[in-house]
Image (cartoon, rainbow, N blue to C red):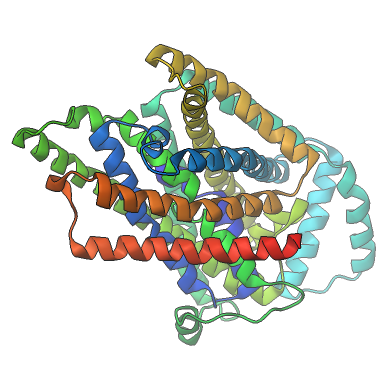
Length: 464
């Protein structure tokens, strides 16, 4: 549930709905595959970490080229601060709409909601041009979202510094479960509204491996592949997951590796538990991701709305209006706060642990247990504090999240290679998986290669 807490957030609420808004139903197949195939690499990385009692970064140092992967992760980590800036900005926008701090903020929210709802539901506005002018004038002066982003960051730092693993686990579970059920319920209830109901031919089209055409200057495939890098178990979560397995105690309960049958039995038992972890979290975040995507396709795409910049959260709230009516915005804002804050909270908790580990590797002298705890506490203050600064300097949450998605997509093939190396070169013969598992592991790697190569090619074209 910690994994689901870090996943059901920016990728699902922001990037996935944006993909649905751009591409309609055409990329439903890509969203499902993006959630499914990464689990095999996730399990393989965790298997090696638990058996050898090593964190992900120390495990990567055991493979040829592992140091390069660690350094690339560090580059992705720096970009990821921007992603978390976008996430805390989204939380700030949600709170600024539900609880504006200034009169200007309240007026701006009211006018923005009127304009977005009129476009979504085809209602006429007598003074549309005047409304657009007022919104344009107010937008640069409204600081409510930025103030809320700073407040949320301060609360996060306090919780991270005084909290422990159990607290992180319970907090993530509560936040994720609530909004996941609301969103899935909203999607099913939407089928009672003729103008937004999803027809069977649209679902068939979405599952038929098709590609939408370029429309209105947008290239949906680029957004979709950036989304692929961040939905489900993204590269950041693949690297973080073994840390949570170790902190939970799976390696400790398995015990130091030896040749005894007792150790092999314990290891097989904890491998089963870990796989239940992975597949149950996959079930949760796949349902949420598909629900967000279908809401984006059925409402935002049909209405010609795209969530972006300071209007992102207000635009996303429209997806709940047909079902929940006047209460839609309040329900969505509570849910948006839950999923975005859970991602911000868990991602910072993970990054503090990962960065402490990487610094130990870079200095070629890993920290001792107490030293590492102190470093984790220190980074639990520094890293969240940097995030709202990024949002204040560049208040475009969607763009920050998608840039991070590109970096994660580029890291995926490297992690797929690491998983294959562990499987065929370092796996204990007593714990080897079967041929069906191997097939899916190779398919996972192939998917990573295709996505990483496409994004790298696009970026090179942009440079030259």
